[in-house]
Each structure stands twice: as C-alpha cells, then as structure tokens.
Amino acid sequence: MATVVEQPQDASGPAQDTGTAEATASAEILAIRTRINEIDEAFIALWKERAALSQQVGVTRMASGGTRLVLSREREIMEKFRDALGPDGNQLALLILRAGRGPL
Image (tube, rainbow, N blue to C red; front, side, top):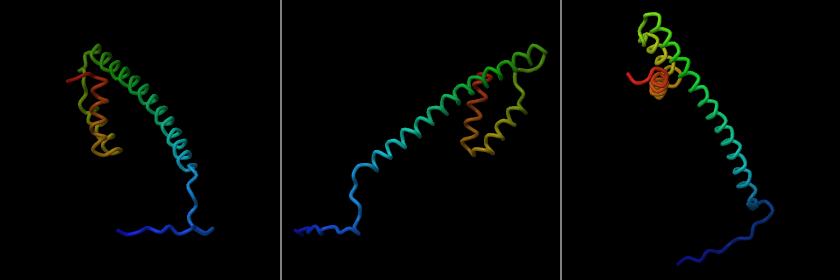
C-alpha cells in the first residue's frame, strides 16, 4: 500500500477554490434558464397565434369554395423548416402544421 505525501503549495501553485466559481456558475445558469423561460413563453404565444391564423385561413378558404388544405403550401413550409433546422425541422414543421389544421 502506497503512502501519499502532500507537498506544500507555494505562491505559484494552483489557487485554492473558495467556492466562488460554483456560485458564479450557479448565477450564470440561473440567468440562462431565465432567458430560456422567456423564450419558451414567447414560443408558446407565437405557436398559439400561428395556429389560430392558420385555422382562420382554412375557414376562409373553405367558405370561398376552396379546399381545407393546400399541399403545395404545406410542402413549402416543410422545406423551409428542414432547410433551416435539418431533419428536426421536418418534425417541427409537421407539428406546427398539425396545430393549425388539425389531424389529417
């Protein structure tokens, strides 16, 4: 069994952790999470607004004798999200479209 001998640290050695790094990290995480929460709230509000507008388009289109869906428009939206966000953008676009038009 080996014996560990601690060497005394001189002034050029590593600084001792006084706990301030952890407190700074906690404050930074709290600030970041606060901003995430703000973004989430904005995202939810925009999601609801977009869904309502999309439903309004569908009702107006059907009232004028059109179809409930315009597949070329849905493809356009899918492509936009996929191009901007990659494969996850495709999934997000599907959810957004469904929120506005309901299930097929």
